[in-house]
Amino acid sequence: MRVIHTDIKDLLLFEPRIFEDERGSFFESFHQEQFEAAAGQHIFVQDNQSVSRAGVIRGLHYQEPPHAQGKLVRVVKGAVLDVAVDIRKNSPTFGQHVAVELSERNRLQFWIPPGFAHGFAVLEEGTVFVYKCTAFYNKDSDRVLLWNDPELKIDWKINKPLLSEKDKSGVPFHRIQSAF
Image 1 (cartoon, rainbow, N blue to C red):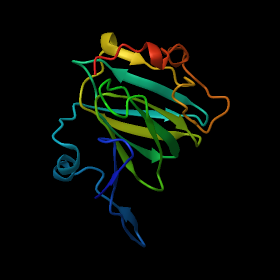
Image 2 (tube, rainbow, N blue to C red; image 1 turned 90 degrees about the horizontal axis):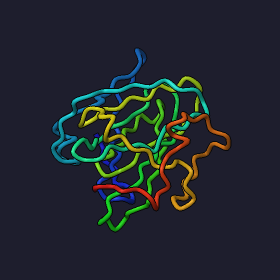
Image 3 (tube, rainbow, N blue to C red; image 1 turned 90 degrees about the vertical axis):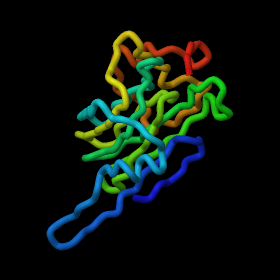
């Protein structure tokens, strides 16, 4: 598995080695030793999957400590624009983001450690998005950062997104009270 470093320290892409022949293809979607060599030691405790219509934006979500989640995300079917925003107050990249396209074709995985808000825009109908989490969902520590905050300057590649009520009412970036 090849590790690709992004513009923000600790946000990593993992590109699997694909084996293809006339029967189809095969790849390792996760390898603990290779992951730990690049991202450090993390224990995954919950796997999630969503299926979404084209034009949906989910996010920007995060959980406050002690329930902060790291996420290893990928697309099984379709494509998304995946976004992680640095909300670590003492980070030199605080308020900056990385956006990457994840698809069933490129098979990239994106590691988003605790201390980042995360969201994605669905680019293809019926996209299946899966993620491994390092902490269980905790409703009391669940937070939403406003997806279209002008201060963040995120180009979601979607003009009129479909949003949940929760995501429509996210907190502006300048008002987050992050404990990171």
